Length: 306
Image 1 (cartoon, rainbow, N blue to C red):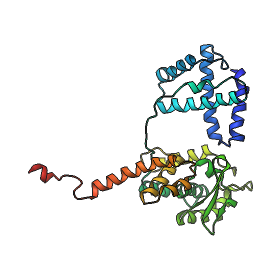
Image 2 (cartoon, helix red, strand yellow):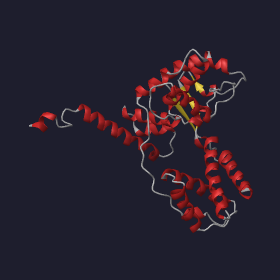
Image 3 (cartoon, rainbow, N blue to C red):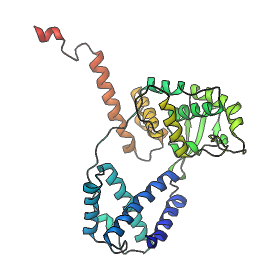
Image 4 (cartoon, rainbow, N blue to C red):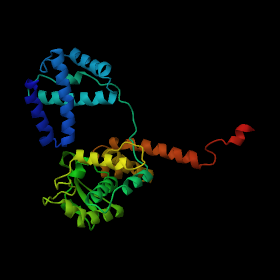
């Protein structure tokens, strides 16, 4: 596998330093590509001399031997398609062989989200008397109040926050900046954290807002771990992720009548298509409310009996 590593490391550097991908995303690409290299080694194939049939057999391997879901297969093919496009651009291979291969049909899944009462339970699970409890509560409040991605969250510096206007300067994908507002609940916890918990945690005079117990910058993986620990202390029977809270932010905004263009700008989506999936969620919620609230939405038992 060593012969592949030079090309792989060059590609990962390209993703991190030129495309500004987060460490978590770069690691995901690395894992997908390394899995493909292991398959090539097993089959005695050269990564620089692949043909369409080699890719078809790899696709069969993912489906039938590994039993991967369609969404997982599609992600892996996307990672490899990007890698081989990089190799083609660098003249390492003549063309991107992965453009010949179509992935399986994507399973249409609506984004998972928390109901507001579930979020309240999560908020209350954080101990505001401790430094880490204040930090964890602020992580929850800020993810929900702003809808930022976890990579954007951990990159926030104290200097990015304008407390007088209750806004934060966010550095998003592709180094694109946007301003996001936050509300009074988030403001209250932010003030507490900055005057208390942050001062206790900031042992290294860091400029970043979210710090770990050693005073270093909190990582994306660290945030995921903290959220998992928080939900374990509650009765909420759902998995949790930073992106699920982002989904909740968008879903709740649309459910309360916010227009799609505003939600798109707040989320930092380049295309409105990425935001439109939340309209399906909101429509389902409206149907539930209609069915439960409108007097002639469902035929009563008395009519059935008559």
